[in-house]
Length: 320
Ligand code: ADP
Ligand code: MG
Image (tube, rainbow, N blue to C red; front, side, top):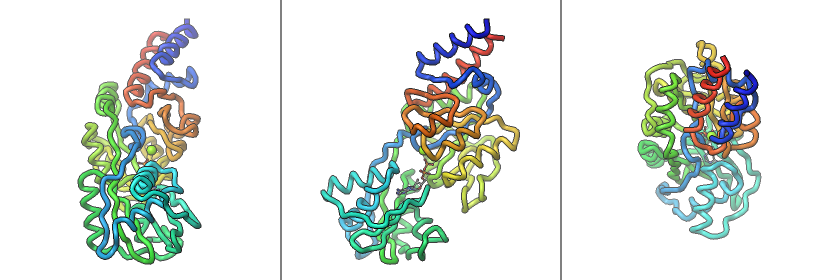
């Protein structure tokens, strides 16, 4: 009877757009008690748009957008695509970039029109050992602008060249319409949700509130502790985690005795998906994430994560 029940379970899974790697996966779904959710592309659509450009005194918006757009044209990040598209729409052809370099989870650098330019998180522009050269000066007005952008739940992208930050670009993503209900269902299944992101704490908190994640459980720090690789800002929000450190967050939760499911979509998430007791990949995400996971959610919808766990548990009960 066992093999038949499994086939029924996985057949129904396929109907719901849930692909299960193998029968052994079902057992993990019974034990999981914590679900780590990657923010960008999993809880949110990952489709960003540019809302605003603020410049420092003496710098022109067009120039800031031109350099920002040129740098970001060479990057694959969703934030980069939004900025490059907006710049091309407004300004037409953008200048070429020399010596482009990606600083994983922080931003990019390159030379545009002979200017050594940097774009990304404020932390990256400030240097702090993250750049191969000295950091840039950041005028107070831009610091304030960045804080205001983040206070309303948008991501502040800072761009600068020739030793000084020149502008702040406000970029925003939208929460998927089904994320809130999906998280409520995951809770009903007895799972504690944890929001994990490389983005800043304010944006993370805004998204968390929107989807109904509020602290009532985990209190341990993300790797590196506050202000370095990760900073915990509330019970179940882990923000400012560099891509390479996502896997350590999963390990920490496991070391606390938790059995962890992880839902992600990006190349950045692959190691964490593989480390998790149950890895679920968004079918709309990258192949690397799908390969590293146990379950694939074809629709790219978080509701399917709850369906997958419920269905797998029910299938196990049928077998036993
Ligand atoms: P997430 O964990 O939410 O999927 P990432 O790890 O990809 O996010 O990126 C973390 C942060 O690094 C972004 O929120 C952004 O502030 C910054 N960043 C990364 N790449 C870029 C880029 N090309 N341009 C501007 N900012 C970037
Ligand atoms: Mg992501």
